[in-house]
Length: 149
Image (cartoon, rainbow, N blue to C red; front, side, top):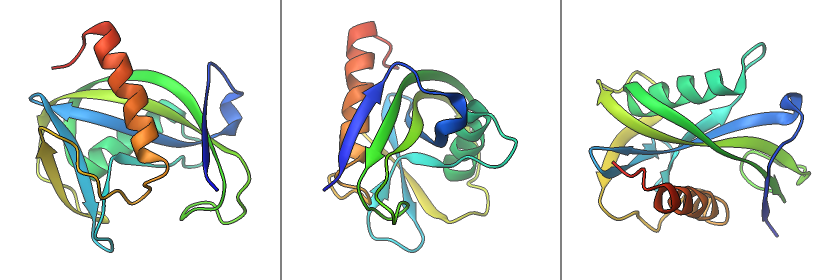
């Protein structure tokens, strides 16, 4: 079983992932990995000696081609349970961001096959027990603060 929780704060050293839910010109930005038939929002692992915001900026560029954007922290989150990136099932922590993308360029050479812009989000997620919960958290922030673009 997968469990997603949200926290106001955890020690920075515990943050292993950054996930970025993004919009561009009012549309949701969704990625498709070359090796999968499902969709993902931008995100990935934190590299050694990298701050979590640097991880978010790097992953957003690598996976969407976003080169100019406003990045807003939303919440610390955790995932407990075995999944594609956590074979042990232990609780792992990440930082959830919202990005308002201003400009995009050609997708850099990466594991991402294509980037799609949608008015409505798809339902076929790579992490169906995680990504919709994170997206819902961002949607609540957008609605509450009226920051949709």
